[in-house]
Amino acid sequence: MDAKRAKTGVVRATTTAPVNIAVIKYWGKRDTKLLLPINSSLSGTLDQEQLHARTTVAASSSFEADEIWLNGKQEDISNQRLQNVLGAVRALAAKKDPEHPLKDAHIKIASVNNFPTAAGLASSAAGYACLVAALAELFGVQDQELTAIARVGSGSACRSLMGGFVRWEKGTRDDGADSLASQVVPESHWPDMQVLILVVNAGKKGVSSTSGMQSTVKTSALINHRAEVVVPQRMKDIEKAIQDRDFQTFGRITMQDSNQFHATCLDTYPPIFYMNDVSRQIVQILTQYNDAAGEIRAAYTYDAGPNCVIYCLKQHVQEILSLVCHYFPSSESEFVRGRSTTASDYSSTVDA
Ligand code: ADP
Ligand code: DP6
Ligand code: CO
View 1 (tube, protein in one colour):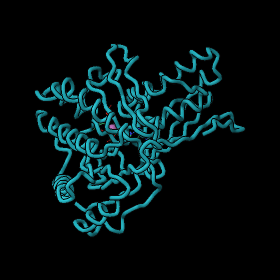
View 2 (view 1 turned 90 degrees about the horizontal axis):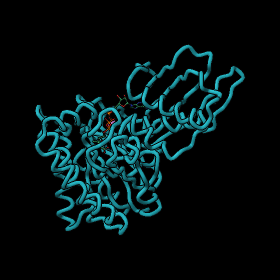
View 3 (view 1 turned 90 degrees about the vertical axis):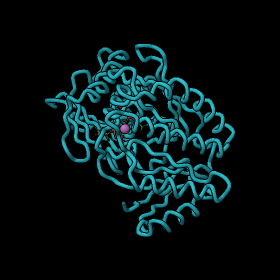
View 4 (view 1 turned 45 degrees about the vertical axis):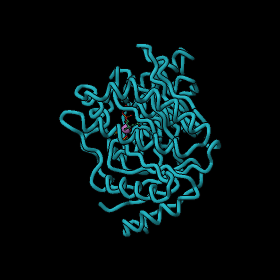
């Protein structure tokens, strides 16, 4: 993580950042420039040994321009989100030291995700959190403001700078100063909590989260009810369930919130379909499994994509994996086992 100065006068830093998967979904902005949300949200941060973004940033006054490569391909640095982040880190550095050694330097960025990009597995969250962490290291600025800087890259990214369960308060101010992320509990609070990921389709989604939520805010008649009435109550209830390690309440709210988020996508005009037939089949299988057990053992949630994320307790992991392998036999060899934390300990590919 150290910013290193090479003999060439180039300073560089490399860092990794995890994805986070929301159990109360952020969907809709009240300010599209500052990326201020219409509702608060809450997520679990996954183990970065499984899924992560890795970003190297290098600075030198001999570079002619800022540049970025994502997964080996050069992207457009004039992208507003990248400009937001670069501008905010430079401003923070200048505030701390008007004569900052990197004040006239250009920056080269290279980032790689070790999991599908733009497929509904929170690549924008890991990616922008990672970029902010790497730039903060490079410029030597460690600050409370970093979650706000990650937010202006991608809203969900502000929740990836902390482990455990993290809330993002929507805030009420127009300048976004109170729209920040904070930790609800550290990972150690609920060591039995596990996350399984079933990759239904690793391809890039047809509608990005940014444009999908914009279209929902514009056209859905349900979204305001969700943001104003449903989510505030769910935030309170799920935080209590997490504090109490009450998996029944946690799991029920998680599934209901995923269902409602996808209902607002269907209520968007024209409608947005992130889940596909396999996603829905998994919902059905897990519902039957929970019903047969007489309790919730597997809580599914889907982001803006077809891929399934299951929150469950350690003691049910094997049972759930066997169930998935029974229905999708070709996925058996694909399971990846990792460390036991509040984390993505297994992932799998499910053939569509
Ligand atoms: P996802 O569901 O994967 O978060 P989004 O539609 O929210 O999908 O965002 C995908 C976009 O996020 C990508 O097209 C890219 O612009 C940006 N992104 C993804 N990974 C990174 C990364 N490692 N560094 C910088 N930007 C990234
Ligand atoms: C369904 O944070 O990717 O994953 O702020 O426009 O970059 P932008 O959108 P993004 O949206 C995430 C939506 C979600 C739910 C969530 O992570 O809370
Ligand atoms: Co995203």
